Image 1 (tube, one colour):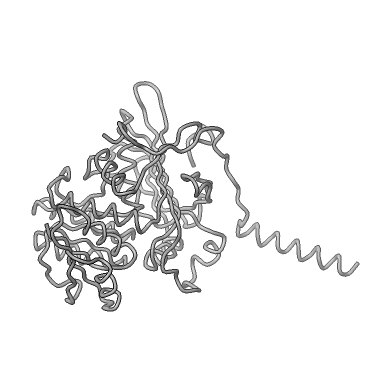
Image 2: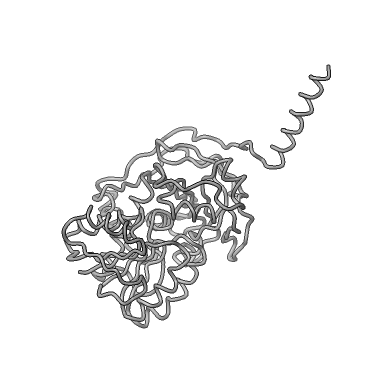
Length: 45
Length: 336
């Protein structure tokens, strides 16, 4: 029981520290379609 | 044409190599306070290159002087060579350097010389991409720049400094200072770099782009940073810098109006930052010496070059720009 309580406290503290430092990414939305294409030919003339 | 390169770190060495392989360049003069490094670079380049063991700021016989040394010192050097009526190209991405170099504009115009400011990967290639994107619009509303990666040790140190200093955004016609490491955004760079969390930092892109696009409402710049960067940004560098970073990338999003419609275009490029910066600075130096810049004075590449032929020349040298085709945005709402 004591070990479980210690583990919960440790996890809680780590969560608080991570929240303060905002270490976890808030993410973003990946492109829904499409991709990168190199410029070439008439686009560079 | 004779070109002097002051500083032969990762960018300076690549720049010298680009110049040596340029037909119009007759001789490249190299200077660096580190004699051993200077001799190594000199040996690796072969004919058409000479070293000169003078101090960096001593007068040099050259049509163009390229400042490729540590950031934070370019303003003094540029002023000195400008007063000798020489064109100057700076690769510095330090906010203080860029601000001081732009202040040389009126003197450079009077002398009929060019001071090409921020002629590297970012700023530099990013400015050219922004100008290229702006051609698709009647009016540009917003420009958002992001970059990932560093060149050599000097670039890594500058990256670390930038992450610990106040950022500068252009918002609705005024400058706004923002805390460093704020404004996290997941940016999608050309493959294989892909998605990177990017943050505000002391980056000079906005200073260069606002002058080039009168009427632009918002200009922001961000840099990719790791969790370790976030934790240590305000501390001295805790470990030695790498000789050269891995592949990097830039991404430039331009929003504007065309007729009655609003649209967005996203350009990018992926390369080793020092290699791309060397190519951009080399083309900038050659164009300055040939009188191909759009005007004399101190400004970024977005103001000084025709973007399409500049990108074509970079492509010929192996630095290729890309466009994002498809639904590049997470939404159509204005960006934070």
